[in-house]
Length: 490
View (cartoon, rainbow, N blue to C red):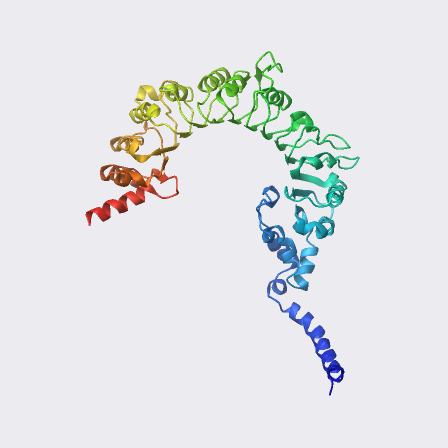
């Protein structure tokens, strides 16, 4: 019997098997699991919603796994019943992560169209990432952005990370983006002539993040902003931002530049009455110029990150001028002049949390000595907090890139005060002490905490004070030191 005859002979049996398979497939789907059999569809829908990764719309899709991005698709492909539940749960599809890579060119447009369609008319949370190494079809990118534009009235969150070339294509439709609450624009490449400008009314987002974009190139209603994060702005742009955002509460400004050096935006100092949080990252001279131009009476959290010397004069003048009541202060830099930190902290009697990241310890030893000596106050001092040194501090964190051998180890337990005063109601209420010191194997036993200091530290831990002493490689230095001394003893 030749091969053709054999194939013809098996066809009836094959057809019969395929028919049985079609009959069994619905039964298999029906009994796939007990979830959909025992629970109402609305409960199953709620369970599905909890399977979606949190804050996926805010994450960098460049580093996110395909599984996390495709979670709704995975849920809808398990079985027929799961698919029905997924497709009738529009909330499952409102977060739209779109990652355009060379491999996704052909399928992404259709996927985006179906994904957005399944979200019904609910507000959309869009996260679009264009691979910087992808030199694919401009036609695909244009079609994708046009698809997104058609739904601009439903934009609630828009994050774009991709070439600046395409930024100006985000125009929405004639009705604008009335629901837009969060806008995050992080283009790469030259941005001199690329603007974000919608065709309809100006959007009024509450939260915005921009990087490497001139302030004027983002055409929105700035007066509604409450949260702002920006990088690569000039001093003039920062001052203009403060003037244009009277409702702003939280502000982070990274890589601030001096610009043209004119600083002509405001001859008078700018008073921002509502700003509560300010984080700055720039050089000392630029920071001094900026801080000398503003008064922030509501400021409660202040963070300063500088490459070399912190702008102590600018910070001091701003705090004094603002008469603010700081609760949290963060300072990062390479070095600081002796006595400056003490004088600065004396302006912050309401401070609860202090975080220091400095590279030189010799200028700070006077600070630690003073901090240890002022761990509690007398009854007369207690009624005048402004004359005391950090009387309300509950948390102090210190990190530096120096070896433990150069750190005054005997001061570590003294920072918590005296054991005899641990129950003193006038003791500084320090409850958390965190130290991070650089790991260097060349120092041998000097890279461990001595036994007497460990005993004192353990006493404070037993009293409920959270003390963490870590190395920069992530190891617990306190635990390692205890193990080292135990081995030496045995």
